[in-house]
Length: 192
Image (cartoon, rainbow, N blue to C red; front, side, top):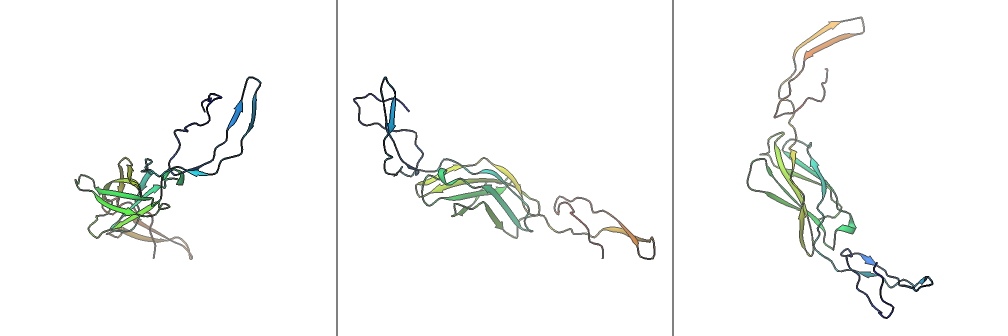
């Protein structure tokens, strides 16, 4: 901090964070050196302000059919700038002009799930997440692309055959199911 003239008995402290408790000490100094600091002042909380820090790491995906799962890294308490903190989640299908808006009224939240039967599997959505508190709406994140949930495979594997290897073993083979833009990738098979 700036050194204050010895005849001055007050100072204005600037660049503090909103809605944070601070305590202050004063130290006297002269040409010989610096003395002991004063006792700390009482705790003083700065006034609340509109939040300016948007959530980071906006992503998501997965989930069930007809779901859009959106995730983010929560904003730390010291950057929430006031009471009544929450998130504004905005999303739209890629290429659409109208945003769908949802409010998540929990400071600890890190996920929002939108369910709608009209969502097609693996549909890309533009997503942004903003913040608000009792003072007003704050900053929005940049746009991220998040895909809706996959659908279950619609066709069975073809070309199934079995070959006896021994008295206790049979080798079963099949043709893999190709990747499909609507149903996604096959993660595994079950042999019955």
